[in-house]
Length: 248
Image 1: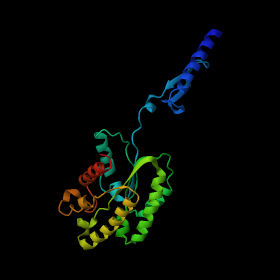
Image 2: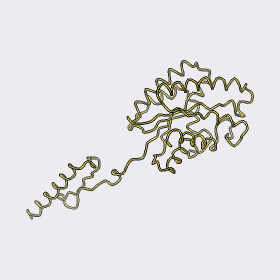
Image 3: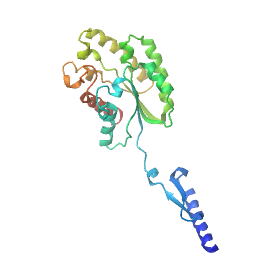
Image 4: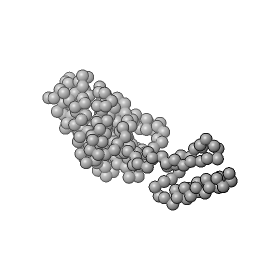
């Protein structure tokens, strides 16, 4: 009986020694649980933890990110992930922090109130249309962008990537028929100019989806039933362009 116990202890010590000398394992890779006898310990490899983890993706923004008027699967972040996965990049489903009507400072408040347990491989930022719509000053927008940059640095991985996405032009939608289109576009261009400078200053990639949005006035299929927000078709075009610039 004693020999049997000594043999088990010797076997256990041998396994533990082998695990300590391997760089492929750590404490998180092992589960220790008891068998039928309290003296019988078994080490079981957690197979899932040995595989490479999928890329994590955090999408920050407003109605254009949360996908007002479309199904969850049709939001641009979700279609982006589907596209990346189809092309051999293993992504988790996106985590989205966005709400319709949010301005830059609303997004900042939400980020500050969120307890991030993990850091992200990829972070996107698409914000500003509600700053423009509510006639908020450009200097306020630019100050908030710098604050958002600090927050994004805090919640991205050391080797993570951030991309800045331009503000779509709602002046080219049926919703804006009673408003001067050129006036809206001029203001959107000013905000996007700030976004481009912000991206360049911080060495970030920038994607222009504004030109795609301006086709909506002549292509009704690019707009949802509310006559304002993009349809799944427009979001798919965004997702393709973002993927090609960001990942491919």
